Picture 1 (cartoon, one colour):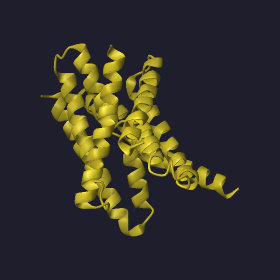
Picture 2 (tube, chains in turn blue, green):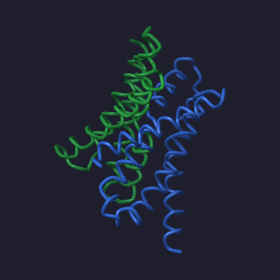
Picture 3 (spheres, helix red, strand yellow):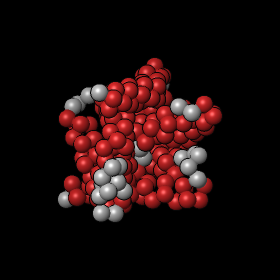
Picture 4 (cartoon, rainbow over the protein chains, first blue to last red):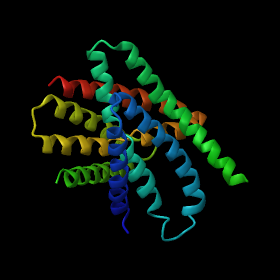
Length: 127
Length: 114
């Protein structure tokens, strides 16, 4: 399989999952986008460590696991466009406090969650 | 029908981002993720623009799905994290955060208000 095909197939799954999660609740889409992005960062942290360890060793999967799981599935699952548009809409509506909460939890939260996931994954490898 | 629209747009968006990342790496190297930055900024503009227009629901859905998959937040965070781990690359990580957030927000606002 070509890497390009792997990206496309991964995106079908990732985008569908995001769609299901966002539409499963009537909560403000700001928070579902945040949840999706943080969950995606966590999963990406795990996947990159474990993929490097287990999947790169398999000749058939070596060229496609990263395009499929990271670029396609989790890249398609998480989204910057909705985060940006929702942030600007909050500012336009004068909801500066919500904007700051969303901003902080997305960027700092994303980095923290990614770091935690990588630490957990690396600990798992060393067992 | 709308499910087909949604899925086709998502696959197209992610593959296009993948190709842009590949071209940017080939032309400009791996030090700075220009490709992902470009995808995130363009996608943020397009989503904002699509919401400010009176498009039919099918095209609006296609645009929203395309932008959702064309832009990536996990990829952005992963690239920042990777550069934060190496002391020499930390300034690049900070510049990358400021550019991605600043330009994506500006692009989204531009789209929403046009």
